[in-house]
Image (cartoon, rainbow, N blue to C red; front, side):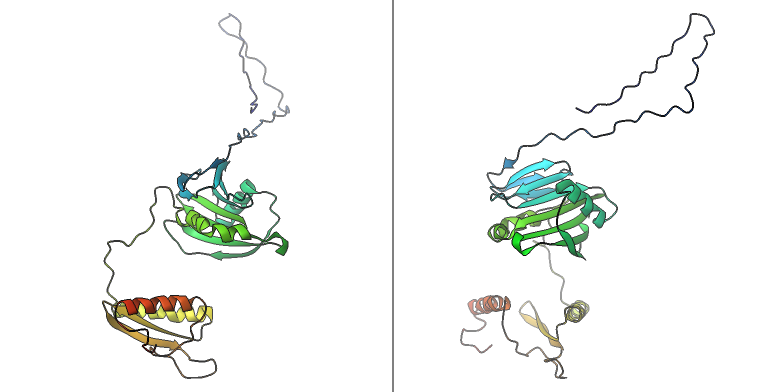
Length: 289
């Protein structure tokens, strides 16, 4: 129990009409220190979720706690632990001047003696009511087989920091549940953005120009030599063109009909798109592409 000093001021006087006031204390008497140590936070027993369950952080931000994960609160931190017991995600609400300060406070609440050093920090884009998003990555040793990171987000004058402290094996097994936590983490009173029922803007010249400008800027940022894109609206091709060069060191430029090698994740994606076109009777499996 917290012990607070009790100072009693007692004024004593005589029964005469003009009582004599007590002498003042010596001016050099040191003030007694006041104990401002906060009361210890009672331990909270972890609660295991029997199903995907809506929950809130200490500040009232909403999220989904996945089935079979354990949840408990420690000061400003709401901690989720995977069923394997070797991985945690902490949602920590703090007041701070900026993202860096918020992350420092969050680590102090979750794991003050963290052994990992900061490797990289990058700014993110506003999303789902969160602003001033910043992501942090930490260096772990190969023997740990562990991923450690943090994300700072701002809403309603409060920073919410997500600390990811997860074993790689568990991340591979629980990836969809980790995604559920992040995807449904919203500021208090917020709702996830949806375009259902909204009418899209037409792809006019101004919007196409903005899109192509974005493509060209992204090519420079990512170091991509050449790109071709096509835009289809209401069954009609409204733009087809290329940007950059076909090959480094050569002047030939790509266009809307330039062929590219299909590899990596683009292979299944392109196959899916072709299958959709076959189903729609737009082309056949034997049509050259």
